[in-house]
View: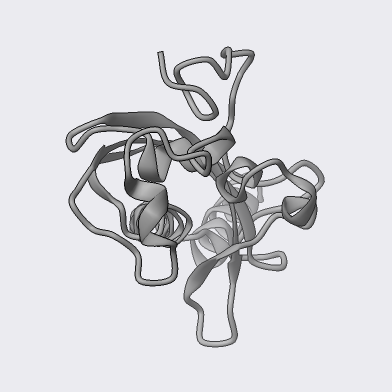
Length: 172
């Protein structure tokens, strides 16, 4: 009788268990989505003025209170490190005079666009909230408090106590 019960439990466990490859495929898909979405956020928020030279996924996890992306509403957080370098692009929507040395426009976060030389490195860490759309693709969700941030990219950046000097607002 015990042998029969053990066999039934084993068969039931095998029938309802997730295949190991499914978890790996989900993890790989989430990492690819995090890199794709981080590249898009950086390109959009830095107005194409920077080339993304490095992106790496640090971790992908379920937000607190969530069961699992495949069983619950598709929502995960991803932490991605990045490195960008200033290129020669000049966004058509920005005033050309602001790119001239000494421009009064080159203050605050705008220094990232006009106050630095070509090749200037800008690096940091992004936290993305990824939601699954109707077709099953993972997309970054814009932070709800982003409109109240000092500069557009701040809503995604993890400053982790790092001084803004030399990082985002003011060059070293």
